[in-house]
Image (cartoon, rainbow, N blue to C red; front, side, top):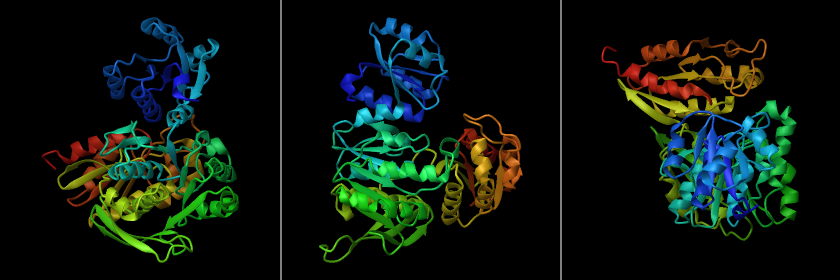
Amino acid sequence: MSLENLGRVHFLGLAGVGVSAVARLMLAAGVPISGTDAKELPVLDEFRAAGVPVRVGYSADNITSLEAETGSTISTVIASSVATAGNPEYDAAAAAGVRLMHRSEGLAACMEGKQAIAVAGTHGKTTTSSMTAIMLDGAGRDPSFAIGANVAGFGRNARLGAGEWFVAEADESDGSLLNYSPTISVVTNVEPDHLDHYGTAEAVEQVFIDFTERIQKSGALVLCLDDSGARALLHRVQQPLTERGVRIITYGTVEDADLTLSAVTPAGFRQQGVLTFREGDDQPEPYSSTMVLQVPGLHNALNATAAVAVGLAAGLELEECTAALGRFSGSSRRFELRGEGNGVTVYDDYAHHPTEVAAVLSGARSATTGKVHAIFQPHLFSRTRDFAEEFGLALDAADTAIVLDIYPAREKPIVGVTAELLGHQVLSRTQAAAAVAAAAEPGDIVLTIGAGDVTYLATEIVKELQEPNR
């Protein structure tokens, strides 16, 4: 559905990173909008400053009161994944016959008329999407984008550009990635996750198969051969995609990838590597380019390689891609620097799956000769139950590993599932902040890790470290 057919749009969960991205895009496109969120958060002030009517606290009366305030009828309600049936405002809109759409459907409407690049995968979506947007922008393509975090260099999570390309993070957590029909799709990796939604690993694998079927004819699939799940996906979809004229570009550190990453050399919080592209019998010989990144970790080098593969599929030159990626300096809550005290640096990361935790700890290790201290907050009882042993093993890579109580998010407690299952010391927030501040020495790194409210603990740790009596 195109934007002009939506009428006045009201957003439920306006302050959420996914919903706010769609709202920003529609506001920039001239669509009249309003919104509600459960809490008063800073992002709401941004919308108010732009003249957007905002409500705090869901109520069945909000729809009619906003219509009276604006003098126009709300035609469409766009909701986050948590504002569903049972939410009084959602139910009131449904009873009034208002068109109801999921956030991803609203984003799909914003993509109309653009060449969509949808970045999917169990891990690395946000960083790869951010890198791709920065790369296209640096190459003068002025892309639109909608990403699950604010991107350093843009200072926001969404923008409506004048160029033909639209970069979107495609979320598999609820299957909403199937609402897009991209020109270029990316699959960074495929691992079991969100089993509360899918139930089985096989169902997770199937949604990625279905995702590749959404690629437009003569489009492209970019896929990582370092990941066994993505490689298995390739074997299942290669023939039908080829028959549909979809180009496949593989990447990774392995020799059989079309775009190969090699000679990765860390230098503190910077790193460089060599990208070599080889594809097809008509290419006389492979060609290479050096890529310099301002972010550490092999996982980030692979994310950047994915972005370059997208650039090649979009018609950019290899050197053009690598040069533009040198501008990338990170995304919100992805190894984000939160402060420094007494020679100790504090970073925050959104990692909430064992593979992600292992990757961020590896990146921290490559960036310092000191020790690495981690405070991890498990996210969801079901995920903790399913991956407790794997989380414990990943945290073994830290010199100090402290675990907080489980952040429940949308779930109710599960009997017998506690943070103690991870096999590491479990402390309260106050105890954890004091413990890492006491253990850390100049040159060390402290990491707060998790998808919950552990992010706010990073600021408290910085304050502890900056105390004059330390």
